[in-house]
Image 1 (cartoon, rainbow over the protein chains, first blue to last red):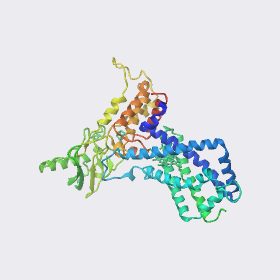
Image 2 (cartoon, rainbow over the protein chains, first blue to last red):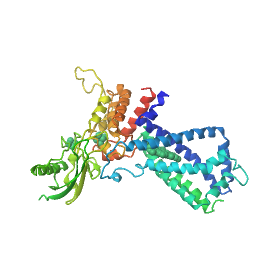
Image 3 (cartoon, protein in one colour):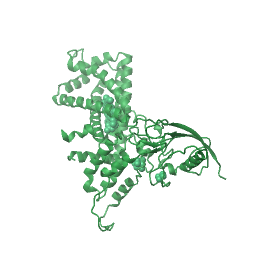
Image 4 (tube, rainbow over the protein chains, first blue to last red):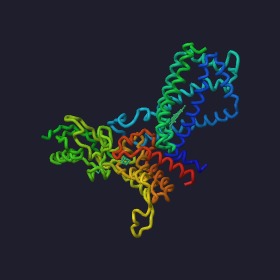
Length: 224
Length: 251
Ligand code: HEM
Ligand code: SF4
Ligand code: FES
């Protein structure tokens, strides 16, 4: 335990924890996005429900889910702590600022973007995860599946808009976070740096775009 | 013919660390060929002639190598130009009639001494904690007895160009000193003379950096953008990597 205490006590240790948990969440997003994209087969959710059932029944994936949840909590609390404590390191603020001339606004707004994500996640988890894991409301086959739940929830234009805002926050959070995570881990390589940077940009735009398209196509009734 | 320019200044005045400061407005006639600090010399002569207190500001070499000058000009440490210290900034970078705001470096770890002058001894204490090599004194060893690969020597030299001015801290929204500490750690750990102490050094320097009240890096890159020596962000990833490996080996 003492070996890892630096992850909670030193500035760099805290950053390393942010990075490890953040990049694990990135890996999770890739899986989550691939499975959800099964709705685009437009087969009344057949493939999607099967994939979701596989994820729900596989013990390896269920164990990873616990790890993911712990990671999300660590990432969120550590992120909020760092945001608050960093903000205290300059009690007397500048009167004239020129932040945009030396950095991107979203790199300076990870705390706000993360908080928006946290609020969104509470809503999102209560929509699907809580219902499918902790209630008997849904079944794996029939007319009351996770897919049906999706189409039901995305009937509401307000919810669709909230989801799209959530995805935009995610895109900006990742646009900075993806490459930042590698930098925090001490990863630096003349040949790999541009690949990480460019792959990060594509990932940060593509994944949230695919996610955001789901509530939209269901609302419009293009996927049934 | 040298055209004179009229510059309106909003300068931060603060009696000492405990007092509340505020902006004072001044007007200075300057030549475009003056450095920013020479323009301040003119202002101070003007103030002295009128029986008022001159503005305190730090400076020493005035040729971009000592790291003493430290002004936040229109919200940017060392002013609008990249890779330039305040002393090497010239009035031709501004226009006749401009209003320029000038503030001190702001960070809890850099308390204001007076006006634009801040106490940067926190950096000295970080260096004392580990920014050195321990060797036995004696005859000076010939410089070429230890061969160093050219690329490594160049990289170490690049990091060693940090002049310890603190613009990185002043630019960072977290008041983080990691560009400075990263530069020192990189410079020493790349070279054979610095290698034996590399693990204990990085841990000691980071501990001191945290104790001084600098923030944690969030990789915004503002430090690099404002650093007069353009120290690359890769020194921060080197710092992170060395810290992580020192910690995992139980240091
Ligand atoms: C799907 C969800 C999320 C993903 C994929 C994600 C990913 C990331 C990544 C990769 C980083 C970069 C880490 C680094 O710079 O070392 C990061 C940073 C950050 N995240 Fe998240 N994050 C997510 C959710 C959240 C949530 C819910 C919060 C809650 C407050 C949050 C707050 C932060 C903050 C404040 C930072 C900046 C920390 C720093 O650089 O010191 N994130 N995130
Ligand atoms: S890293 Fe650059 S900005 Fe920071 S102290 Fe060194 S020279 Fe100044
Ligand atoms: S006065 Fe020495 S660097 Fe500016």
